[in-house]
Image (cartoon, rainbow, N blue to C red; front, side):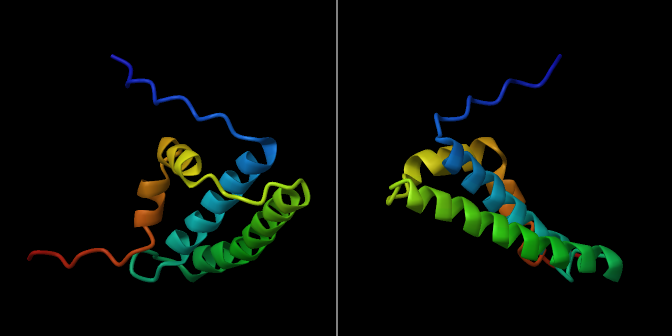
Length: 102
């Protein structure tokens, strides 16, 4: 039996879509850098390099939104999009994992 279909993404402008995608890319990189979860320095180094590029893409998406007169972030709509795209799961990987019970 296939997994259930995720809810549809809310309607977003192209710039909002770029903003959400860039934000999630930035969130993913600290999770890969996280010393409590990582195993290799090379992977963490690559993630740190990608973090810089992701931050620039995030800045660019917000710049486009601002230039187009999109002066407000529609937090409820953007939060729905983040939930559909696994933002909560992805952001949770940034935290320090709990200690083993053993």
